[in-house]
Image 1 (cartoon, rainbow over the protein chains, first blue to last red):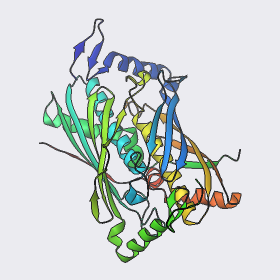
Image 2 (image 1 turned 30 degrees about the vertical axis):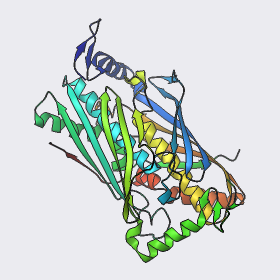
Image 3 (image 1 turned 180 degrees about the vertical axis):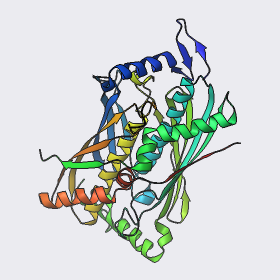
Image 4 (image 1 turned 60 degrees about the vertical axis):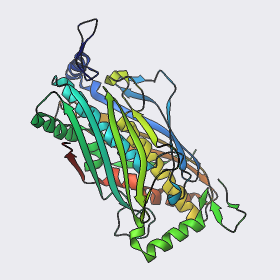
Amino acid sequence: MTTTATASTERIVNGVNVDKLMQTMDAIRQNPDTSKFNFRIDNYWIDGAHNRAVVGDFYGANQAHRRDRTFFTYDKSEHPVLLGDDRGANPVEYLLVGLAGCITTTLVYHAAARGITITKVDARLDGDIDIQGLLGMSDKVRAGYKSINIKLKVKGDAPKETLEELVILAERLSPVADVVSHGTPVSVSIDES
Amino acid sequence: MTTTATASTERIVNGVNVDKLMQTMDAIRQNPDTSKFNFRIDNYWIDGAHNRAVVGDFYGANQAHRRDRTFFTYDKSEHPVLLGDDRGANPVEYLLVGLAGCITTTLVYHAAARGITITKVDARLDGDIDIQGLLGMSDKVRAGYKSINIKLKVKGDAPKETLEELVILAERLSPVADVVSHGTPVSVSIDES
């Protein structure tokens, strides 16, 4: 979490290799296709509220990537109050998990690019949902979160104002925050096979 | 994954207790506050792209709920091509995990409510992102997914048209799909303590 010099001359700030970050940006300037990524997952229903996602390969920087280790699997379920058996967080909680991670990583990377050492990014997120939407009980109640609040505690070797600017930047440039704030077109198709 | 009779007279369809589902809806009709939920997570930065979410309590059905077992923890990271150490799926993959789980559970619950036995819900999701947005390299490139595609394979004891209607219903009533499609206001505040 501090700036360290490696055996070579690479600059590591906040655990981020800043030289590689700059090389990545140079590669994108030379070939804009380098910045195009496609992420994908597979998901399998098991029983009731219990289903499982498998996260493995993705495409980016002009090639397919397969993860070295076993694919990541994530179980989703619901608490008994929502008629599940609680074998994992529920899908709307996963959304908050992704949102928290994205704002955190975006902040840490952009701090690194500016040479700012970060020592803490703690976040608490919460969101309000009225499940009348999910249950189809009212057309006046939306299905999703009505609002999401993020409370961030950020510490680092920069003035308070600089850390605040980083928070604003992270919110604006975080991919998940962008999707959640502004929406993204979703297309659903049925595989008849 | 089939309709089963329990020792009592409760109807279980697709692993969902339909009687409890109907009781929940009755309770909401009698007291609309019952449908109001608040989900929350805590998230801690560890190093570089690595951060961890803890998912525990939530509020809903007029009371706070604490999970019986250990809280769920989820590690997020980035693949080395995105300068991480690959200790978990990345945040935009988590978003797809939540989206897949939400559409699946919404479909299975509404099928249960209609007495339709479901035998399979497999989903493949993918989304395109141009990381020039994340990197702040272009104001013309959005940070988030440009589009997300969901391919569903659904099997059950209903005509094809009925299963297709369930897919459309699931997309419309899924909380995560609603957030991703239409956006949700996000407010960020800084905890100075």
